[in-house]
Amino acid sequence: MMLRRIALLGCTITNGNLSSLLGFSAKIPTWPAVKVSSSTAGYSIRYRAMSASANSTPVNVIAENEEQVQEFKQLNAVNDRYGGVIVEMSEPMDPAAFASSLRASIAQWRHQGKKGVWIKLPVQHVNLVEAAVKEGFWFHHAEPNYLMLAYWIPGGTHTLPANASHRVGVGAFVMNEKREVLVVQENTGRFRGTGVWKFPTGVVNEGEDLCTAAVREVKEETAWMPFEEYAAQPFVQTNELSKYIVDICKAKEDGKYSGFVPVPTSSPFSDEKNYMYFNYRDLNGQ
Image (cartoon, rainbow, N blue to C red; front, side, top):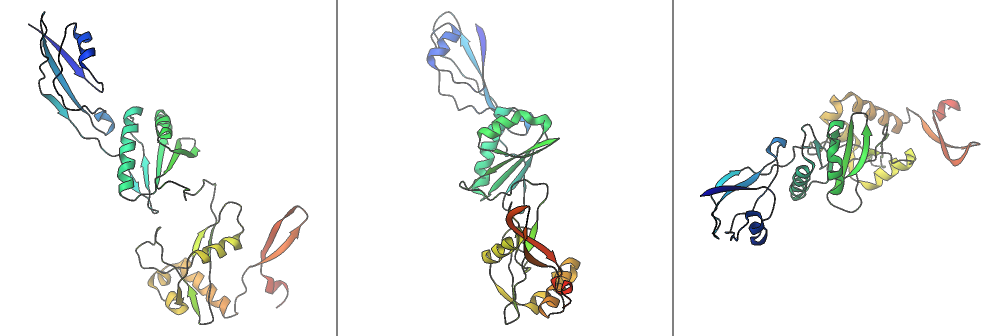
């Protein structure tokens, strides 16, 4: 008797192609499904090695249970502050196996309610770029030593910020006749779940005027709180920057501080709206 070993690794064998392979008529018994990947890359492998008995007359193939089983693992990721995840690839992976793990990971992140997915690929792992792009990722930005890819799980228009050399933030101090100030609590970001009330803040969009951005942020979020109550928050009192902002806003409201005022101006160099920021009161001797 001669033993012939057939290693099944990510392929399908039918009665027809098995007969061609063995050189005689053979009947395949029912075998469990095969899953394939590489354990060296941090994900799993499942395969079965089958032994077949053969002689000069047709026989049935007999399968021996020689099994090694490992489970597919999700890509390592950390949560960001905005309901998304960040993946930093540090180990080499086979592109096909990476694609399988990426699909499984996205399914899990979708189940968890995640939104944005960031994959940071060092230059030594550029072989994974094509696999990621085929799964729907796009190029966000590149640096000399890495490429950043992005993906938006919810579908539709994403809210991921565009890449820039710098970002400009704005905040709005709004007080009504009751000396109540407009405050918000963050659903995402650094202050999420802390109970801290803060002024409406945000990031200026590309090409957006600073004043327009401040008004937009105010319109997006509303809640009124007595100014003294806001200023008395422990976070405000213990944070130097926040306390300066509160003191400036209070002085401005009391007429004791002019600050820089945006003054619309025209320019011979552009037809676009221009603003000069300066101390208008001191300039006019008021």
